[in-house]
Amino acid sequence: MWQDFSFSDIRFAELAQHVDGGARVLKQNPVECLFQFLCSSNNNIKRIEKMVSSMERFGDFLGNVGGFDFYKFPSIDRLSCISEQQLRDAGFGYRAKFVVGTVKALQEKPGGGEHWLDSLRKMELCSVVRELCTLPGVGPKVASCVALFSLDQHHAIPVDTHVWQIATRYYIPELADAKLAPKLFSRVSDAFVAKFGKYAGWAQTLLFIGELPSPKTKKPTGGKKCKNDNNETY
DNA sequence: CAGGTC
DNA sequence: CCTGG
Picture (cartoon, rainbow, N blue to C red):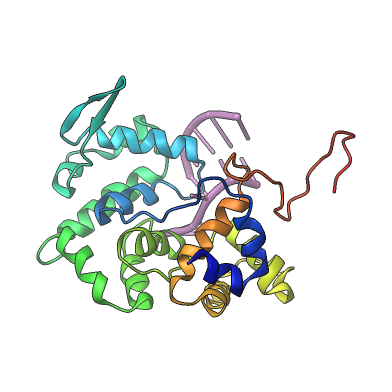
């Protein structure tokens, strides 16, 4: 698949040379995935990890490995035991009410939230995103993450600021000066799908990794400005 | 301002 | 709008 992507896009080919150990797209449990990305909006990885681990404590204890306690991610019913105040105390901020609201919305689904989420698998991507966006705290970006990482929607493109940068830099430069409006969200995902096809979400994942200041990439090949030893930007 | 959403 | 860097 990397070869196909590299053939389709010189940018991908260049980046693929420099990522260490490859990259993988998880197929997560939908409930776990949804609540994790519900924590992710306007937020950084470190705090997201903290928030997620505080939720996990409400799941069954699995064991201790290498000094770390592991918990099964809590079911929707288990999550419903957490109050908004508890979540705020755990540092969720305004996302606390999103978690409580999404738990409630899922519980009200006929057949239960797990079943409802699973039923999205056989729908078209646009419908999946539309349905997920009915949940409080879930917008197009979070919905796309859940679709890609847990609901088999391999061509879902989670458009955040980084992906927007990549897209306007390489694929739709005519929009370089535009703001990331909802209308343009589909322009971005269309561009990725046109370039990479039905597994565009997988290609996007690698490009995204390349955009981050991550040890994964050995070479600062992203369009970001870098500094050399003389402190000159290039 | 950060891997958005209301 | 919460909160931390």
